[in-house]
Length: 378
Ligand code: NAD
Image (cartoon, rainbow, N blue to C red):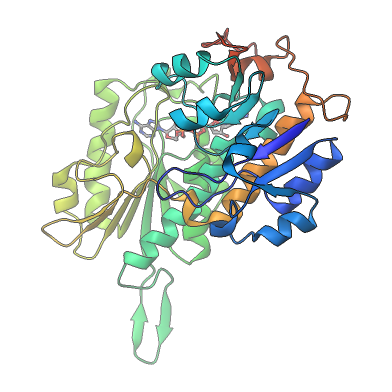
């Protein structure tokens, strides 16, 4: 079978779904690989390196007219129409948020695997693009903050005087938050973190950061069963808001990453809190694409508040490290293809008895299979 890798067409996208290294691995699974000319240009993978890895170069139409199509972003209408009958497409889809896209895909006799619907179980971690992109995004969020911040992150004692380290607050200590904590700490900042899930406290402390606490009820002290935060109560939010209000007056940088699956991002940092921050402080809102954790966030923009606080709402943080992001995304796709190619013979065999494959199958041969049955954690 042939795997096709078209150039991404979404505005501003820099990533590519295959790298020369992933092409070699896909070929070792028995596939021919066709990469659209120029597909890796923005991620520093020139055409000739794909050719050296054994790929053939071709047009967008040829890449989309393949047995298996690998993409980063969900396909456009034009791309959906260009898929060949019987094709298998793997890309981001956001099926829970885009029912009309799912219906549109089901209008074609194709099979669609959503890379953002990989079940959150240990066995599936190797396929999990949400984690690999969140990890890169958390790193880049801190780099963006450091870029906008007018002072050093690290403390210094110099002949010109003593410089205190910057203080960073990370809200939401999931994959992105932990990456942000690690990056800010490695730049020399003093880092604090908070999360609705109390069980992450140990991980935060193990990275040398302080885990901030609020009073929690017995129910709020329970560890989550699936790693996702539940919708918080108004009472918990009020206690957390008091904590954020006090922290906002002290810290130099706030990085917010709080998300609850299937819901708009919780609003945690108010305009009033931003107004209480020191001039020159920075907020990076990693939930900007989902409505934002900060009242002042504008998706895709940097807003400066009246008191001189920069609020960064970039929604393309992983794409700002296109080479690394492409490498990790492409590796996640190779791991998917390993699962789908038990004979290592270049033939896809979709096993819907396997809960990882079932969980991410949105459409099979034109039939909508979304949403999947709940995942059984063994
Ligand atoms: P996420 O992106 O859904 O949320 C980010 C963080 O925000 C979470 O830690 C969440 O608890 C927190 N949050 C949500 N609402 C909040 C609020 N109101 N106030 C404060 N914090 C709030 O989460 P994520 O980073 O994708 O992952 C969360 C967990 O799941 C991690 O522990 C991770 O290791 C685990 N995980 C497991 C797998 C797997 O096993 N395959 C894959 C991905 C993640």
